[in-house]
Image 1 (tube, rainbow, N blue to C red):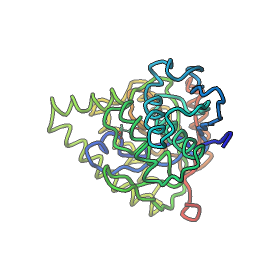
Image 2 (cartoon, protein in one colour):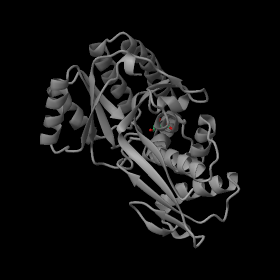
Image 3 (cartoon, rainbow, N blue to C red):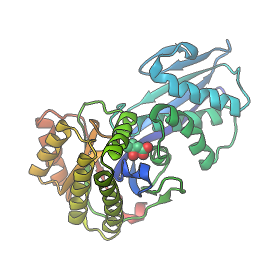
Image 4 (tube, rainbow, N blue to C red):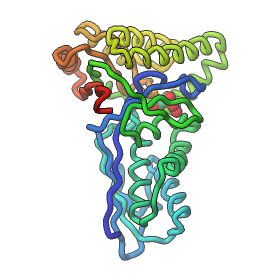
Length: 314
Ligand code: MEV
């Protein structure tokens, strides 16, 4: 093939970040409005060129931020028996990096899809997740696999580490307002901080982690039974546990206050935390828009509005 594209999208963790690392369940939603595209074009000079918002040039000279991607490409070329192929790989992403939206996993999913397509090799979902795990390990240490599973899913997923992700049918009338704090939060560091806290305070940490698992179970029921107010309470309770684990941030706390003062039923951080994004739940579109405007007025201009999908569309 001369030129092919692989696509992927952002994800939002509704509940279960961090506790998922310790085998508690998590629920994550695809965010199809926020896309990543990886375009592979044949390069007749046998060069391997990488182009992204960070860099454009020979991939061997790429900066450290692209190390994960480079190792992924090495692994892919080896698996596809094409180590010396010439190509230009162009990555176009709407996702802000290090904001808990799964930017690295989404980028990796798009690249794997583009590469397999480029070399005309069929790609199973299982194979895709295995390939993505290569770069996720380099970037995040020991990822649960939740980001990769959601970046490649078309429906919300119920996820337990080490198990096959399950599509989660639900029926909920409500809206999520997602807002970017503008602060970079590195997932790898956040995960390491939780591990350190757990070592220093095992009882408190394990209690919070276990409680987050219970809240995920309750959220699953609330989603299935259209209990939007209850879901809001669950999200706020999860935020208390995440704060206890040390992964919130004063700016995130401030954003949640703004959301709640403007009618949000609940709010929490999403993803790795220590910055990144917050999500808040609104019962109606009018509430969601009011929250969005209030956040914007408080200086948080980067927001996304995501209606929950009804069961029919899942
Ligand atoms: C990051 O999006 C989610 C975390 O739970 C880490 C992981 O699942 O690997 C914080």
